[in-house]
Image (cartoon, rainbow, N blue to C red):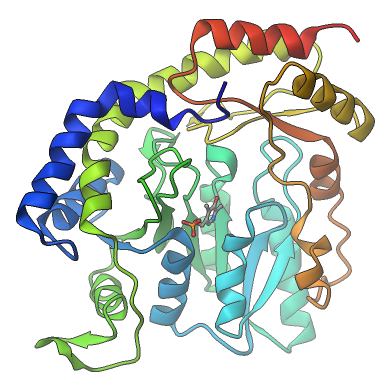
Length: 375
Ligand SMILES: *Cc1c(COP(=O)(O)O)cnc(C)c1O
């Protein structure tokens, strides 16, 4: 059994993916070939955004945005304390200071109350200028973008949606990727829309920002092309092959995979809700369930269960074992007196089960039986 079975997806889509790969091998435009623009248009259509600027990976997507916005030394970038480090790291790469905020106890997303508290602390101290809020749609569950947008408006901050995990998710019927000044995407293979290598992108409605990002991803190219360099940029493009591979996968997300994810999540929820804390998705939200996470009552109960899964050869993961403030790399990051009780409790108790749109009923049965078995 696979934790995320990419080969099952490939088998389902093989003729379409193979035909797309062969087309690229035939035309040989491996960098910025026609499939890149076609894929960007398809992502715009899916997310309802005016622009999609694809790039090399989801980490670069955040970094390119910070470069475009001129984020650096002396700037504060607010991030949820529970996320993949790539939500936090690019700001630090450019010299900014990450300010971590606790999560909510129900959705595990950035807590608007904790966010506002941290903004006030930063302003009161007066050393850093608040600039950006990174609102991660954690595990595919939309963040509270309405409350976060309101806070960003009041304090004049840029609202960045990190939707690396939420492709296909909805908030009040609106697709993730639609919130904030821009949203960053990752197409790492195991994400809800993944390629066969690294890939990423940015979606936005801001014409000027999109133009700047298109320049930054190709060495700061100017209006007369890639040897007319007008600023310092970088090399961060999505390979044509990866764009080609994702075109049929994007159709599958729309036509089949999101529904399959909802059905499997419902089956899991029904099976586990008496024994564990199951994912809470607000009434007006649809999660993409990039991961299906349960909470045990404590670390001891969790680790006993993980041993049982090991014995049954059922794969499992922990997203994530450590809140950002306890990572060695952030030992010197200012915490403004916060102790992050919800983040700490979540990381002590969370574990994730195999989950993907092609998980068979037999596999689901085996997982459910093992998780619920008495010791
Ligand atoms: C995966 C991920 C990223 C970064 O994506 P890469 O493509 O691996 O660089 C950023 N943020 C979150 C929340 C992620 O899960």
